[in-house]
Image 1: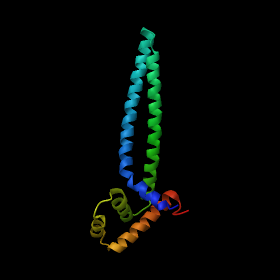
Image 2 (image 1 turned 120 degrees about the horizontal axis):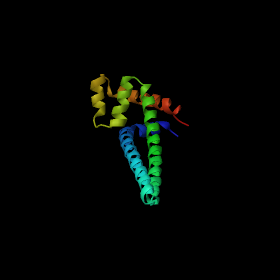
Image 3 (image 1 turned 180 degrees about the vertical axis):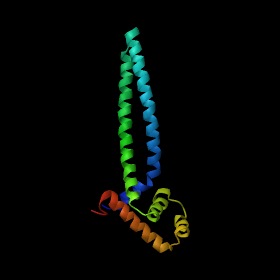
Image 4 (image 1 turned 90 degrees about the vertical axis):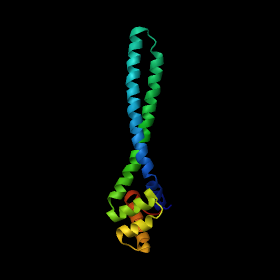
Length: 145
C-alpha cells in the first residue's frame, strides 16, 4: 500500500473539499432556520387546532437532515485539516510544488515553476517527489506498508 497515492488523491480533491465545506455550512444554516420555523409552526398548531403531527414529522425529517449534514461536514473538515497540517510542515517552495502539480494540475506547471524558482526541470521533479514524501509522512506517518 503506497500512501503517496492517497496523498496525491487528497491533494487533488482540495478545491472540491473547500467548496463542499462552504456549501455544507450554508446548508446547515438553512436547515437550522427551517428547524426553527417548523418548531414555531408546531407550537402554533398545537395551541390552535391540535394538528401538530405533520409538523412533528417534518421536524424529525429536518433533524435527520441536520445530523447527516453535520456528519458530512465533519468528514470534509477532517480531510481539510489533514491537508492543512501536511502543508504547514513544508517550505514555501515545497508547498508551491504540491499546489501546482497536484491541487491546480495546470498544464505547463513545470515551466511556470522553473521560471518562478529558477530550477531545472529534473531538480523540480526530484523536489516534487521529496515534498510529496514529506507531506505523506506528516499526515500518514509512513510512505508504504
